[in-house]
Length: 448
Ligand code: NDP
Image (cartoon, rainbow, N blue to C red; front, side):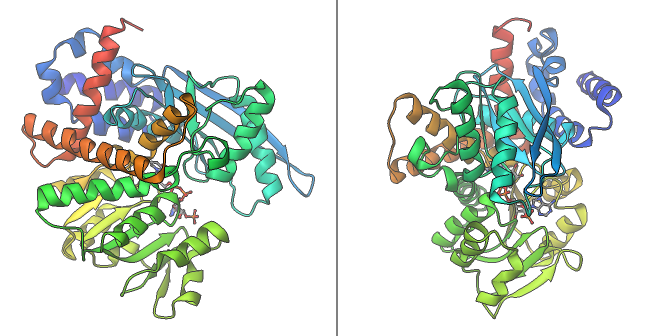
């Protein structure tokens, strides 16, 4: 009966949005974890919670045009999905990448609802972005694009309505240009975006937060489930952007050895451990390709993406931190064969559905992104608090709060997995724990 009910919701979504594969994948993953919970809570069906939660409260799509340096005009599509505001104002990042479309934005926005709920902070779920490709663009082009994007987006956001942040392709530079444009249009200096520079309302640790948070969560999972320490573990991390870099930095600080990292062109392998300061210099200071690393460390090797998968490198812990569906079933089989003991998602939905099932079937400790990468949005919440009280906290204070939030997310996900007869299954645990609070709030707020 519950199965039939869930299937009918997915069938209906397939009928209406069948081409939105990433969105349907994310909905299926959450809904299929909720069976026991729905059985125990008949109000979910009576109040139409599932039918309502899978449809965004609002989806805004707009044109973003700007002039390139060569005077030609580049036209892109901008999006903001305001998915669910049961727990607070919409909160979620902006992604600038050519692959962005409605399906990607909706899957990210849907995930964000439950992730934000898990943080314990009063935040609703949203996401946005554009199919704009920042690669190879000049600083002037990036600025003009950001200004054009914010000119339109500013009509729909506000510090008590919707507070975007960064994601793929959107870092401190882009947030700065968008913040400036919002201030210019509205004549208002307000915490409208998080991930800002420290000079105008940014928070210490926000840059490091998702990566550090991922490692705090992974450490907690290893200690509680595997009864092991992160120290001396061999780690492979995909990506070399914001999440990947600071996950590597924290893992190394805790005594682990990061042996491989990547970007979309391929990966580097350094069997004695990657020097993360070289990666920071290549990526953050010079915006270069990861292959540059072998010019700084001649014991390292570079493999183009077309030749070899980063997941073929043997490791104890795998941290996919690049993008959705980057880790396939075949990759999961190889990781297991090579002895992986834990996989934690720094990116959103980086492991395909079959890979997740295989990890769980083989008792590999698996941390789903909505729990493991919630450190970014948590620290964005802390940035919002500092902005509201016109204060700024020191690095240690914010870092301690972040660590405690991540430990708590692990605890509620783990406790919930036990309560619902799926011990060690953090997919079920985090989905039910995240859903419970949102569904309760929706039911109490009436039929909207
Ligand atoms: P960045 O833009 O800083 O870095 C992304 C990294 O992933 C780059 O190394 C990029 O390589 C690589 N990458 C992107 N797309 C692909 C692809 N199709 N194939 C292979 N590699 C790819 O983004 P973030 O580090 O901020 O985000 C990474 C992931 O983490 C995303 O899934 C994001 O949603 C998630 N996340 C981010 C948070 C944050 O606070 N930033 C918070 C929570 C989740 P290249 O440069 O060659 O494109």
